[in-house]
Length: 165
Image (cartoon, rainbow, N blue to C red; front, side, top):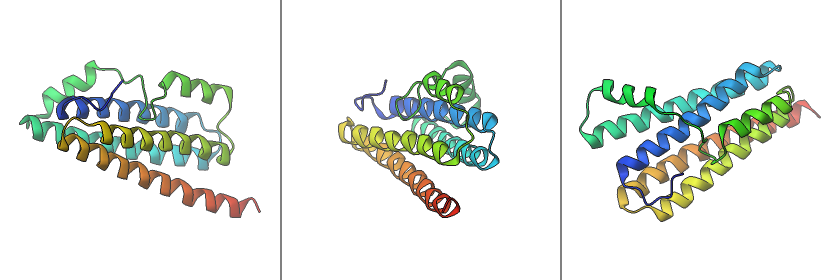
């Protein structure tokens, strides 16, 4: 698990893997969702995680001087992403989906907010513990991305609250 003491390149790799774990979870949740609105929300979140991964890959290749995507693609294909950015194992979240059907938008929203909130807190902690300034900047940027996700989810919660009145 990432500690914040890694150098910039290792931090980019670790962040990439966590984003991938979260993307996989959201993608699977979207597929299993019975309610179309819940599925759409998870699909949107999955797409955002993919964009985070693209951003991290771009940074990694820029810092590393590796302009070719082939070597990074090989890395992605050889690595597993067992943990989400919330620090929760993907398999644990998958078991939540199996245990509770993803039909209730409010329940789905609560789970997503928990994941994004924990991700924000993890990146906050890592930004404070980062070994160098560049790594601090990376984690602060990731925090800002998670804050945008939380804002999106809060807006959805307000809309849903109006629907259920």
